[in-house]
Amino acid sequence: MTTQADLIASCRSRYAQAATTAEELAGPLTRRQLAWSPPDGGWGVAQVLEHLTLSNEQYLKEIRARLDRRPKPRRNAAAMWRPSLAGRLLEHAMVSPRKAKAPRVWTPGPVVRPQPLDGFTHTLSELTAQLDRAADVDLRRTRTRSPVSWLIRLNLGDAFELQALHAERHLGQIHRITLRPEFPGARAD
Image (cartoon, rainbow, N blue to C red; front, side, top):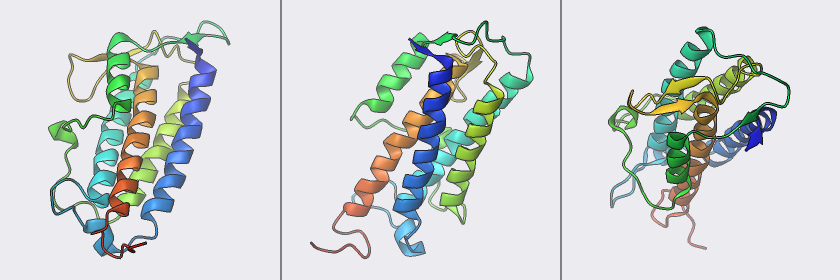
């Protein structure tokens, strides 16, 4: 277990790092590079950013709704947090090297929003704002659901932690895409 304050600080730091990493990886790319998809299948950089944005937007909708409906107050300043069973399973899936098929609602189409990087970094800022709102909420006892299925029940801390892990996972994917030899403008070093 970890304290809620530590979880909030960790997520805040990881969201900021994700925004910085996304800017470093995707900021310098041309439209052609953003739109490029691997010839053997899979998403390109813009599609990965769109996927992250769609996921963040739907989690934000759930988080905001839960914080608007009288969440359970934190009992004391040193309140502890631990993931729920569903949260632990989803966290394990996020750190696993195995590929997983994205839920249909988070699958980007072939054409994404005009500024996919801006969309993603905006949702990270919004997640940080919701962390601030949740500072006095019991993140373990306040329950929410996964935007993918009402059957998946999470605690509010799980929702914040999962979005940090999700961003880290897919930013690694973007890095690997840009290192492919067939990536437009790639140098053969």
